[in-house]
Amino acid sequence: MIPAMNVNRQYTSIQEELDKAALDVLHSGQYILGKTVEDFEQAFAAYCGVKYAVGVGNGSDALVMALKACGVKPGDEVITTAMSFSATAEAITSVGAVPVFVDCTRDTFAIEPAEVAKKVTNKTKAIIPVHLYGQCADMDSINKIAKEHNLKVVEDCAQAAGATYKGKKAGSLGDVGCVSFFPTKNLGCAGDGGIIVTSDESIYRQCKAFRAHGSGLDGLYTYGMQNGIEVSEQDVDFQGNLPKYFNFVTGYNSRLDALQAALLAVKLPYLDGWNDRRREIARQYNERITNPAITKPLVAEGNTHIYYVYAITTEKRDDLRVYLKDNDITSGVYFPVPFHMQVVYKNLGYKKGDMPNAEFVANHSMVLPMFPELTQEEIDKVIDVVNGWQA
Image (cartoon, rainbow, N blue to C red):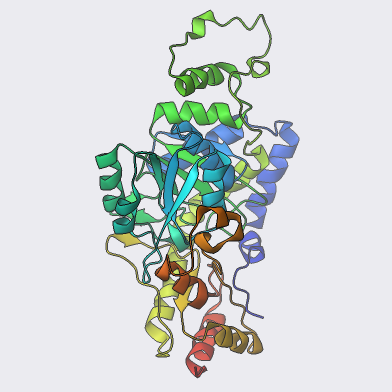
């Protein structure tokens, strides 16, 4: 079978470097935070073109902490797309806020700014645009809406490490960006991992506090910010004890492991090359798939797509998936149920037909094999099989 994704081939291609990095961490005895994590945070912040980065346990936690650092509180509303992975909406409900879903576009699959503008109320605190499948949302329009209504913009960059919008990296386009390092991502670690990127010092310090139980001087700072009061670091006496034992706000245990940071540091210099290879594969798919029953993904103006997945739409998706499987090609569906039709959000009162584009994408989209190590023979076979399918 030709896999839809494959992490083993990437590991093999740089195995010696990765093995050495892992062993160096194991020998160091420094497994939680420390210099290895700090060095990677600085490198990734520089890569994204922002001032700060906070390594955390996963991309889901990144969204939760970013929302809290943006001042989102229980009862607030946060607008996001109906088409994304569960973590996007889950983060909103995890901080006690209400997710407000809007439709995506049918051609880029990104959040539709015109629909966002319609859903802003006096309870709206933030917008989460999702850079779905590796392409940035229409950030000029999103930021304009946010500025008009004094809203925070939290970029969900889980699938977009290295993507650019008008020359700027994903994660540098709003107030704060959240990236996942899940193993299959364009920049993936060997387990769970994530990072928060921002140029806002206040958001940075609060996220540092939230990832480590709300403790220490960053916790004190966060206490002041969350409660709108002045605090003084000089007035705190830790009495010779470690600051981590003094908790000022409720936080989390969500830190990027040194082992994962070391592996990611090895991979980061390869990221742009890997993304270029994904674009080359996408170029071949775009130019050589000629089956009229297939609609190929649109790259919006100003975007550099990094193709976390290569998503197509077709009226008879399930038939095509069976055909591909019979020809030893793996495919996937991202995502089969839009948020407004998920059981967990039934209480919000949405119904079928409320988000027609998201519903269409959920019912008709699928992904073809996409990862940098696909061989030319495999690419040729995918194209030939897709072209040979009769809907």
